[in-house]
Image 1: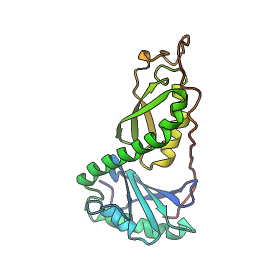
Image 2: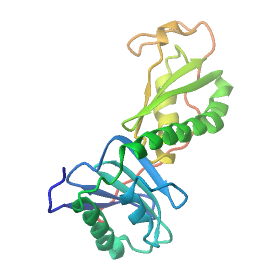
Image 3: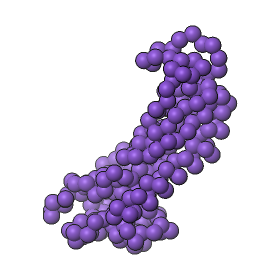
Image 4: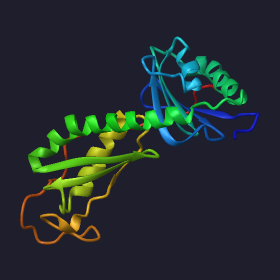
Length: 223
């Protein structure tokens, strides 16, 4: 439970319409949930109150962080105090910011969002190298995948995953901060161990998948 005097630190990102509000206690455990004006917020009162602000278009809640996407916000410091007030009021009310029911529904929606990116954007890109990626689970900000085809057993699969796939998905999906490879690469066409390649005998996934990435950093949002 968060203390009564709730501290909130605002952190701008590379996207001027997005700002992270970091609390001194956990808001949501076991999940990372995203809400828009079209979402059902009946079981997510904090998201509902934030989306009621006319300049907020999207809310992501994960652990101690509430990430907000604005609608033509010119200055986060100018609205930061109001946002901080909404968050503090909800926490002090004693009502859960997000209920268990919303967490269960949100995890399913997050899986679908990541899986759509993999199927529509990532797999067509790595198909030229004979590779394919399958999503198995999304939990605690991590997306767990296996790499098949030419990527299974390829010594460059970790490069494809981290520099291509992970960068792309993390930039696109609020609530996912890592993509974890759970493939048994020793069973692939070009098996390798401890990251060391062996003699090549077949196809290769190549040095990358052609995906793009995003980054973020900043100073203060005035909350």
